Image (spheres, rainbow, N blue to C red):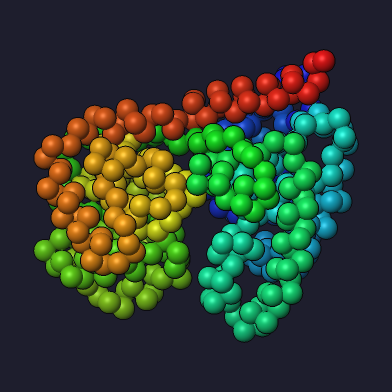
Length: 370
């Protein structure tokens, strides 16, 4: 594919997280690809893409767009359709915000790597509406109705979907009535060191948003003052959790990678009480030989093997989580930590790159070599 013109479309670059790391891996496969996005902001993103040709839609030139980019969601479909992508042979869209709705050369191949159909339009619409301001709450029904129609229509512009988990594959089918190949996203397992000896505390790591349920973890440890919990992350729940002032719960806020790595390697187990489309953090923990105590829904059903690399709990309640912690402590002496690392390596960047390259080139050959 080195002789083909390739474009990569990503909804926005605000922070360097899972979706952006997929783009990073794609750019390793196709280093000469051009990148298109609505917004490029944030020091990490700018630095990561400084050696690549990045184009932004007109949304980036609107007032306060870098800070309040989500306010411009209703016009992002229009902005995508103004991009001139006629010269490209292959277009790869990275989607969980508006990205796949571009207009391309009819002879080009469009593959969408879907992290999730837009959550605020579909499965999490009511959650976002409940936490929105009064003005946004009034406008949301009309605007999201229009955006849902565009989102479904634009799915027809995609030749092939790739889902980041079987959980998302089913969601793509439910939302767009389209089949999808499952290729798990890349996890930088080589950045983490396997450690057999652990300290006597539990870890929760991630954005402190409502759907990730950090409050559930803190509530559970409030009932077990003999157990210690460390929470790393920032978000709207941080100040609320600080008010509880629990002596056995340490709220560290946002931390650099070196601190995150140290705690993933040293903690007894990772607590993962939310529902994620895939969930990179549990795989990072397992790369360190750290098992995962996770709510048994979403992507963790594919990454965390119950009774092998961690423990699932069935309800998002303190009782269910506390029972899972008890089950884990009974199982821990029999656990084979080395298997956790081996299992994590099946989600490596190397595996992702090989599968993506094979899929894209096979689809191109099927469509164009006849």
